[in-house]
Amino acid sequence: MDRKTRMTVLLEEALNPSMLVIRDDSARHQHHAHMRSVQENSRGPAQVGETHYAVEIVSDKFDEMRALARHRLVNELLAPEFEQGLHALSLTLKGTKDV
Amino acid sequence: MSDSVFQTIQNMIDTHPVMLFMKGDKLFPQCGFSARVVQILTHLDTPFETANVLESPELRQGIKDFSQWPTVPQLYVKGEFIGGCDIVTDMYQSGELETLLVEKGIVKASD
Image (cartoon, rainbow over all chains, first blue to last red; front, side):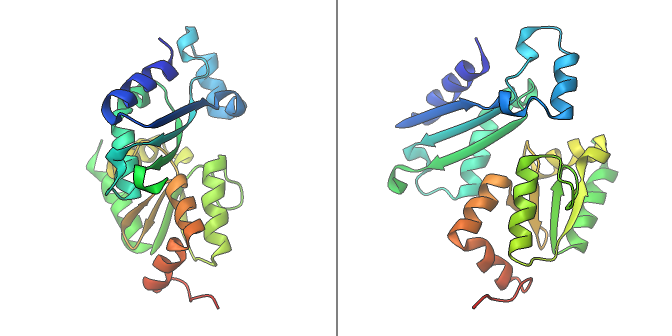
Protein backbone atom coordinates (compact mmCIF):
# COMPACT_ATOMS: atom_id res chain seq x y z
CA MET A 1 0.00 0.00 0.00
CA ASP A 2 1.46 3.39 -0.88
CA ARG A 3 1.40 6.31 1.52
CA LYS A 4 -1.51 8.05 -0.14
CA THR A 5 -3.65 4.93 0.21
CA ARG A 6 -2.68 4.47 3.87
CA MET A 7 -3.45 8.11 4.60
CA THR A 8 -6.79 7.82 2.85
CA VAL A 9 -7.74 4.82 4.98
CA LEU A 10 -6.64 6.48 8.24
CA LEU A 11 -8.43 9.74 7.52
CA GLU A 12 -11.63 8.21 6.16
CA GLU A 13 -11.99 5.92 9.14
CA ALA A 14 -11.48 8.63 11.73
CA LEU A 15 -13.14 11.63 10.12
CA ASN A 16 -15.78 10.27 7.78
CA PRO A 17 -15.06 13.27 5.52
CA SER A 18 -17.55 14.67 3.05
CA MET A 19 -14.52 15.69 0.98
CA LEU A 20 -10.99 14.30 1.02
CA VAL A 21 -8.28 15.25 -1.47
CA ILE A 22 -4.69 14.08 -1.06
CA ARG A 23 -2.03 15.42 -3.38
CA ASP A 24 1.52 14.07 -3.50
CA ASP A 25 3.85 17.07 -3.88
CA SER A 26 7.03 15.08 -3.27
CA ALA A 27 8.38 15.54 -6.80
CA ARG A 28 8.37 19.32 -6.34
CA HIS A 29 10.66 19.02 -3.33
CA GLN A 30 13.13 16.41 -4.55
CA HIS A 31 15.89 18.95 -4.95
CA HIS A 32 16.07 19.77 -1.22
CA ALA A 33 19.38 18.76 0.27
CA HIS A 34 17.70 16.70 2.96
CA MET A 35 15.41 14.94 0.47
CA ARG A 36 18.37 14.00 -1.71
CA SER A 37 20.12 12.33 1.21
CA VAL A 38 16.94 10.45 2.12
CA GLN A 39 16.81 9.11 -1.42
CA GLU A 40 20.48 8.25 -1.63
CA ASN A 41 20.30 6.35 1.64
CA SER A 42 17.12 4.61 0.62
CA ARG A 43 17.20 0.85 0.28
CA GLY A 44 13.81 0.45 -1.25
CA PRO A 45 11.20 2.21 -3.30
CA ALA A 46 9.05 2.93 -0.24
CA GLN A 47 11.56 5.51 0.96
CA VAL A 48 11.92 7.29 -2.34
CA GLY A 49 9.59 10.25 -2.61
CA GLU A 50 6.38 10.11 -0.55
CA THR A 51 7.64 12.96 1.61
CA HIS A 52 5.48 16.02 0.85
CA TYR A 53 1.70 15.99 0.78
CA ALA A 54 -1.14 18.48 0.61
CA VAL A 55 -4.42 17.34 2.12
CA GLU A 56 -7.84 18.97 1.96
CA ILE A 57 -10.58 17.69 4.22
CA VAL A 58 -14.15 18.70 4.91
CA SER A 59 -15.65 16.89 7.89
CA ASP A 60 -18.35 17.55 10.45
CA LYS A 61 -15.80 16.37 13.04
CA PHE A 62 -14.12 19.76 12.56
CA ASP A 63 -17.23 21.76 13.40
CA GLU A 64 -16.75 23.54 16.75
CA MET A 65 -12.98 22.90 16.59
CA ARG A 66 -10.42 25.69 16.29
CA ALA A 67 -7.77 25.57 13.55
CA LEU A 68 -5.00 24.46 15.89
CA ALA A 69 -7.12 21.61 17.27
CA ARG A 70 -8.06 20.49 13.75
CA HIS A 71 -4.42 20.40 12.72
CA ARG A 72 -3.40 18.59 15.88
CA LEU A 73 -6.07 15.95 15.29
CA VAL A 74 -4.92 15.25 11.74
CA ASN A 75 -1.24 15.28 12.73
CA GLU A 76 -2.07 12.76 15.44
CA LEU A 77 -4.00 10.51 13.03
CA LEU A 78 -1.06 10.58 10.63
CA ALA A 79 1.61 10.09 13.32
CA PRO A 80 2.47 6.59 12.00
CA GLU A 81 3.25 8.18 8.63
CA PHE A 82 5.45 10.87 10.18
CA GLU A 83 7.36 8.05 11.87
CA GLN A 84 7.88 6.50 8.43
CA GLY A 85 9.38 9.42 6.58
CA LEU A 86 6.44 11.75 5.96
CA HIS A 87 8.16 15.11 6.07
CA ALA A 88 5.76 17.91 5.17
CA LEU A 89 2.01 18.14 5.29
CA SER A 90 0.03 21.11 4.08
CA LEU A 91 -3.49 21.01 5.50
CA THR A 92 -6.72 22.71 4.50
CA LEU A 93 -9.29 21.62 7.08
CA LYS A 94 -12.88 22.74 7.03
CA GLY A 95 -15.94 21.89 9.03
CA THR A 96 -19.20 21.28 7.20
CA LYS A 97 -20.38 24.66 8.50
CA ASP A 98 -17.41 26.42 6.84
CA VAL A 99 -18.30 25.39 3.29
CA MET B 1 14.76 13.82 24.57
CA SER B 2 16.96 15.51 27.13
CA ASP B 3 15.54 18.10 29.48
CA SER B 4 18.25 20.54 28.46
CA VAL B 5 16.83 20.95 24.94
CA PHE B 6 13.38 21.59 26.39
CA GLN B 7 14.95 24.13 28.75
CA THR B 8 16.72 25.83 25.84
CA ILE B 9 13.47 26.03 23.88
CA GLN B 10 11.57 27.30 26.92
CA ASN B 11 14.19 30.02 27.39
CA MET B 12 13.92 31.06 23.74
CA ILE B 13 10.13 31.39 23.80
CA ASP B 14 10.25 33.18 27.17
CA THR B 15 12.93 35.62 26.01
CA HIS B 16 11.62 36.47 22.54
CA PRO B 17 8.02 37.71 22.20
CA VAL B 18 7.91 36.34 18.65
CA MET B 19 10.04 33.24 18.17
CA LEU B 20 10.15 31.29 14.91
CA PHE B 21 11.70 27.85 14.68
CA MET B 22 12.56 27.37 11.02
CA LYS B 23 14.85 25.86 8.43
CA GLY B 24 17.54 28.35 7.51
CA ASP B 25 17.43 31.95 8.63
CA LYS B 26 15.58 35.16 7.78
CA LEU B 27 17.87 35.96 4.86
CA PHE B 28 18.23 32.44 3.53
CA PRO B 29 15.26 30.26 4.41
CA GLN B 30 15.95 26.65 3.40
CA CYS B 31 12.35 25.65 2.88
CA GLY B 32 9.36 27.23 1.17
CA PHE B 33 7.13 26.90 4.23
CA SER B 34 9.66 28.62 6.47
CA ALA B 35 10.18 31.30 3.83
CA ARG B 36 6.47 32.06 3.74
CA VAL B 37 6.23 32.60 7.50
CA VAL B 38 9.28 34.89 7.44
CA GLN B 39 7.65 36.84 4.61
CA ILE B 40 4.37 37.24 6.51
CA LEU B 41 6.03 38.37 9.75
CA THR B 42 8.24 40.78 7.83
CA HIS B 43 5.26 42.14 5.94
CA LEU B 44 3.53 42.90 9.26
CA ASP B 45 6.67 44.69 10.52
CA THR B 46 6.99 42.14 13.29
CA PRO B 47 10.23 42.06 15.25
CA PHE B 48 11.07 38.38 15.58
CA GLU B 49 13.87 36.00 16.46
CA THR B 50 14.59 32.77 14.62
CA ALA B 51 16.27 29.47 15.44
CA ASN B 52 17.60 27.34 12.59
CA VAL B 53 16.72 23.71 13.30
CA LEU B 54 19.05 22.52 10.54
CA GLU B 55 22.00 23.58 12.68
CA SER B 56 21.08 21.22 15.49
CA PRO B 57 19.63 17.71 15.16
CA GLU B 58 18.75 17.91 18.85
CA LEU B 59 16.74 21.10 18.39
CA ARG B 60 15.17 19.75 15.22
CA GLN B 61 13.71 16.76 17.06
CA GLY B 62 13.35 18.66 20.35
CA ILE B 63 11.02 21.32 19.00
CA LYS B 64 8.74 18.65 17.51
CA ASP B 65 8.51 16.90 20.88
CA PHE B 66 8.21 20.14 22.84
CA SER B 67 5.27 21.40 20.78
CA GLN B 68 3.91 17.94 19.99
CA TRP B 69 3.84 19.12 16.39
CA PRO B 70 5.50 17.06 13.67
CA THR B 71 6.69 19.73 11.25
CA VAL B 72 8.76 22.91 10.98
CA PRO B 73 8.29 25.94 10.86
CA GLN B 74 6.69 26.59 14.24
CA LEU B 75 5.69 30.00 15.51
CA TYR B 76 5.46 31.08 19.15
CA VAL B 77 4.03 34.41 20.30
CA LYS B 78 4.56 35.39 23.95
CA GLY B 79 5.37 31.80 24.79
CA GLU B 80 2.22 30.45 23.17
CA PHE B 81 2.30 28.00 20.27
CA ILE B 82 0.46 29.54 17.31
CA GLY B 83 0.97 26.91 14.64
CA GLY B 84 2.84 26.09 11.46
CA CYS B 85 2.82 27.57 7.99
CA ASP B 86 -0.81 26.74 7.12
CA ILE B 87 -2.26 28.23 10.30
CA VAL B 88 -0.05 31.31 10.16
CA THR B 89 -1.00 31.86 6.51
CA ASP B 90 -4.72 31.47 7.24
CA MET B 91 -4.47 33.82 10.23
CA TYR B 92 -2.60 36.36 8.13
CA GLN B 93 -5.19 36.25 5.38
CA SER B 94 -8.10 36.62 7.80
CA GLY B 95 -6.40 39.46 9.68
CA GLU B 96 -6.35 37.39 12.87
CA LEU B 97 -2.56 37.35 13.03
CA GLU B 98 -2.23 41.12 12.90
CA THR B 99 -4.96 41.44 15.54
CA LEU B 100 -3.08 39.03 17.79
CA LEU B 101 0.23 40.84 17.33
CA VAL B 102 -1.43 44.18 18.07
CA GLU B 103 -3.22 42.83 21.14
CA LYS B 104 0.04 41.45 22.47
CA GLY B 105 1.66 44.86 21.97
CA ILE B 106 4.16 43.54 19.44
CA VAL B 107 3.14 45.64 16.44
CA LYS B 108 1.19 48.87 16.08
CA ALA B 109 -2.25 48.75 14.54
CA SER B 110 -2.18 49.64 10.85
CA ASP B 111 -4.38 52.44 9.55
